[in-house]
Length: 170
Length: 437
Image (cartoon, rainbow over all chains, first blue to last red; front, side):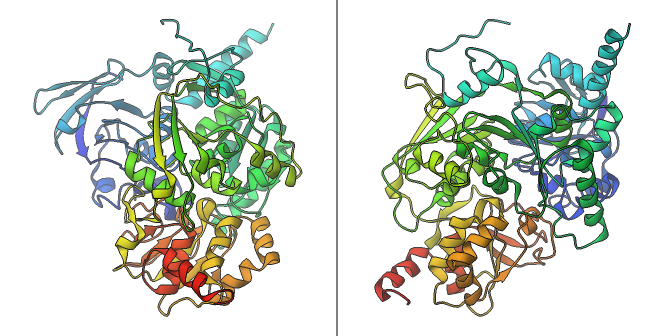
């Protein structure tokens, strides 16, 4: 989990869930939906993003719908983390539930498009490999970090249920 | 962790959360685990998404009597993909023994209270961002994603960071022709779409007390656009009367009030009488200004739809404007009543007939184009005025479409005039003409 490196895709405030997961493709499998991720604000994103890249936003990233495909599409495209000044609460919860790291970074807007970043969710730190700057992030609460380490809520619950079943068996 | 400081009085949100967490009191910022009284899902984020997760975990829902499933996104099924999703939904509900299944009765946030599932003091989750709509009944209800919903279905619990209460007080009375939707567009613009900071937005004051239940639902619905985790209103005699009317138990109205000595985290006070009808420009509900400022805008589509803007009260507002009038040439008026029950009531009292007579085309009782679903999605460059909650770029169709948001009054008035205007111009004309127009 430490030190994922990738390129920054930088957008502004209020990146919404309709841009991340357009309604017209909500019936389609995730690989189809993901190909249209952010199309309304950056038609080149889905085709250009590569695994390990980082999406950077301003304030209120992920506002709008509860549709978790917004986070799932980013994860499907290999996005290692989303970094923003602030997140819409629903998106923040959805992302962590799906195993996508989300980091609240007050200085997110100092990051320029195309810069190389190293993101460390556990340490709550971003290193801008291009500029040399180190950006502090708000720590992810411990119980959520544990879930993120497990890969999201489903594998986390799976582990918990397995442990319970083990305890229950004679 | 430092022990949280418990204040003397609790806000309504804190009271409900404390009860659900099995605690005497809670304080903002604490992380607590709450027992869920009710979990509501629709066909898009519901069974089709939670079924594979429950199967992977090898469990069934924790309590089928606490789960409500409502189809509203992929109805009516116009293609094989939608049909498959609906079939899966129906099969899953039967397989899990969920009795509260409302199929093709309308939009979940409107059907949920109409079918008597909400009572003051409930702690509930919904698989949709507009779930705070139910807060109008004095519930703490908020939207979650499908994976988190699966977690609730397995455990019956959910974690929560106890929110501050952001108290929004409206003094005085709204003037005639100014409604809940205008309040919300104004608030989104004044406080910003993150002004709610994922906290609990509580509406209060004389103007709120005067509102009908469906108008209160519009306020709480759009707490989502304010960025609140939920919106809520303390129950009162209006709440009790509404619940009794649909044959539901009003519950303990007196118990679910914030303590008078409770201190909200933030408080805003506004003068209801000073508010004019608001219209929000593309592409954000936070781009609102008085409707009269948009006189140069000529919409081709006027849309009365969604949980936000097509309940019975909303249809009545549109009918008030459209009675004895025709939709202007070059404008298409689309009306998608939010629920079957509301559509039937509007038909029985004549409001629906007024809309149809004026030239409205009726669409199914479903989320439809508000959520970017259905057949009526907006084409390239189409200019639309809509009574829905959100006008994000591309949400209702082509990325080049331009969606303005307004109250049902404003949408109907624009449909008649062929341009956006202060609906009070038309309502005043009506007054001057006397009955029948």
